[in-house]
Length: 469
Ligand code: ADP
Ligand code: ASP
Ligand code: MG
Image (spheres, helix red, strand yellow):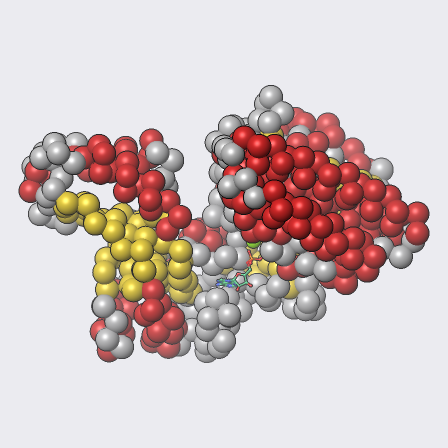
């Protein structure tokens, strides 16, 4: 029996019709004899709405919560109606969804009363999107006469540390529990549907794996249960030379190595969670990115093989939009051992991940790129800790920037790639704010003003003729 983890993203399960489509894709593989574990995201946009509802609750907006509850209930009930035909199965799904939404209302009301939103309670709120989608997908599978059972990440046995909002899986205990709870179902011809993105600490407190985390759930399960393949079903044909929504002429990449795909994922190809490849890379389990709306297309295969079908060094170009750049400068840093370390340590201690870093040889300046949403926290931490000590004299920030990254395994050891990249930018009169090249030489990334982002990507796509095979 071929064992496959199939993960379906938000757009794939956005509506009842889409959920039926997902169910029939799964049913087809199961009927052909494969053992399938399904991992689902929340219905498209629901996680964002939960974010907003949590914020509104913190601001004690009771009326918002009531309207939100109604909206959630309606959306999920309409999805059930379209996804499930059998009256009994439909009723069961409606009851489950109704109960979960009642619980959501209670949680939000609680936050409203306290007027405080902790990372822990925020994760709890965010978990509801995937808690709601899994029972509906499970119902749709039953509707097609498959045996199926729904699990939250916690019920499935995925255990993490308590780094709320971006929790890290504890692999050994997770593997043990998945083997106990999920693996036997495959032998019994039951198709488990696991909520992506969400898990729990050892004490059972709900956590999330970071945005886009359903991909990670899928690969954690695949590695733990030694599955044969992971299929990441999404709304585009696979991983492409650029985001097709920005560069319409972007071309599908039929094959990528784990390293190349990981590099792309980290640099904003939203097609995958940045850490999702780690678990399967270790176990050498291939992943396929496929289009739910175009299942005939074989998609992108990610495996240990590096393909060198293309001689050109750059294989793909990505853009990350929601970032900010911080510059710390001052004569006090010159020749002062540990000054860079202190800055990085400070950011780390405040839970701020550094996406890109560059320092001048003069030692008088260091620039870092972080998520834009963390800018306020980063600036206040830096200012409080560094100012008035003669250590750094100036902390400035730009929040209207984007990171552009050009990637490809053949960049390694190919001279002249950087000059081609930067020449095209100059020709297009795009000003470059900061540059970094990973020592892996798999990518060159740079910061431009946000308004120049699309042109910067297009210029590289054109220069390296990425739209032509
Ligand atoms: P899902 O909901 O299925 O997880 P995501 O929205 O997280 O989907 O990721 C898929 C989206 O990633 C695509 O719709 C596409 O716009 C975007 N994307 C960005 N860069 C790329 C790329 N290089 N190749 C394919 N898709 C990309
Ligand atoms: N629903 C979560 C998000 O929007 C996880 C995911 O879709 O992978 O980030
Ligand atoms: Mg995603």
